[in-house]
Length: 141
Image (cartoon, rainbow, N blue to C red; front, top):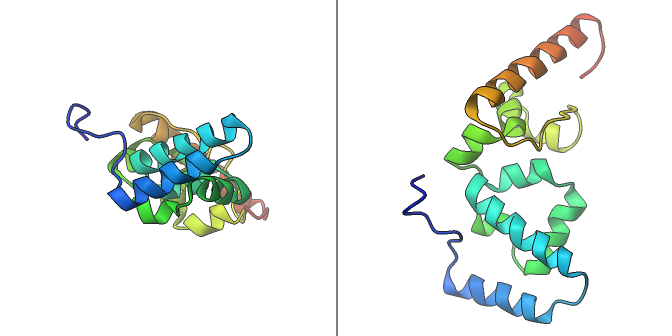
């Protein structure tokens, strides 16, 4: 993605109006609204799958409710930046089990980590090696 040509958010007019109305109607802690808006920006930049990895399901749903949207409707599942920088997403790809990680069947402590491609590759290698070693010992992942 060329940062000089990129837009912070890409929303159609109707969706933007829904979000603005929800912001206007919002009652609660300002930090919750701020976090929900940040999640939208992160979701559009990295993809909604990265949001699923970063947030627990209750927080993910709370942010959708605060904004009056579903992230799947306004964010790609994964973007080039998400592929390149998300440790958690790279591990789900290596394990071929995105939903198993989301549902907690595979513990991925660094799943919210955003890094450069080299660090992502190292973390994936370390994590996959740990899973293989655990399997050899008969310990479920």
